[in-house]
Length: 405
Ligand code: HGY
Ligand code: MN
Ligand code: MN
Image 1 (cartoon, rainbow, N blue to C red):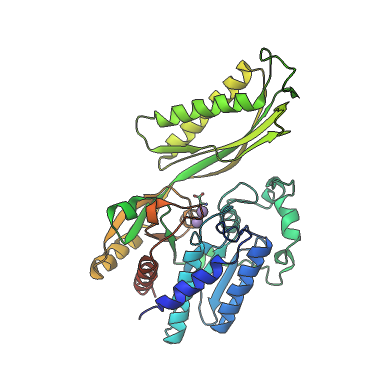
Image 2 (cartoon, rainbow, N blue to C red):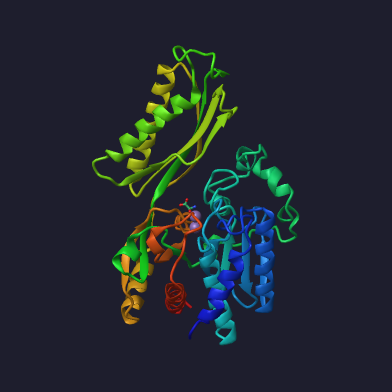
């Protein structure tokens, strides 16, 4: 059975236009106008192909052929980072839809269903994989009041503005104990497959990560009339801590850890005022949970010591954390068997990016497939994958799935 590659690419191109930043990449935060528009389009595609849609309280969405018992899941996300790429997440969703449509067209009986996880990027509340964390019970209802957006709304308040909270079908979307396996296909978001000329990545394990938010509070003052001596400049303190943390991670002997300070707010953010308050995030990731833990603790020590040295008040809040997790051995060996049978150039590799598959893998047999990212770019407008690789990946996923239905 062959997927319709042309239709796959044209659907992906259509969704890339549903963005808050046309011409500057795809910006489609969960629960935004763009998210609702993309969901509406997915619903239309589902209905056109004799499938039903249900959404849970958090915005996780199931798209299921009417006769499917839903024991085999496809999963991924449609939300993006700010000015992100046209493929991150959506490629997995549209690939799954293309496979489900091809099954329908070929009257193929199966029990596959697609789940679109909400808030995978954490663009609203700073916590990645939020929809799948609620779905798998890693997050309880109290989290709805603890996750706060940059403009001060809790996740509960944000959800109350969407239709999900009033969704009739608020019953549990899926009974995880009933699911046999989940598959996610995704762009690699790194340089390995593209650099080494592979078509397919078979994901061995997904890295773990920890994210913290640091608030440094110094003393604001006039930039011109305040002598340098005695300043309590919160931004300079943050800069010193950031450089020390970067130095610590870059000099790690095993080089199996990455760290990023990606978000920074300076207040009052005026050129002629010494920054009173600086808020910044730090995330560290590794395939070794012990390394992630130890590195975050060492970074917190640097953050606190720098604050004491510069007489700055320091608050550290834990934002998110997930363990590194291997994908299912039997799924990986089936994937390798099919890749060899189809004479595909494939490589087993780990994922530095996190994915909802990592949350689901704690509960069910889960497998992940990568396709190459050109120049290894992702989370930027330049994110791209050759069309033949996109089509090859989806066809390969269809070939793998047929071993499970
Ligand atoms: O951050 C990540 O790894 C994913 O893209 N949310
Ligand atoms: Mn993603
Ligand atoms: Mn992403």
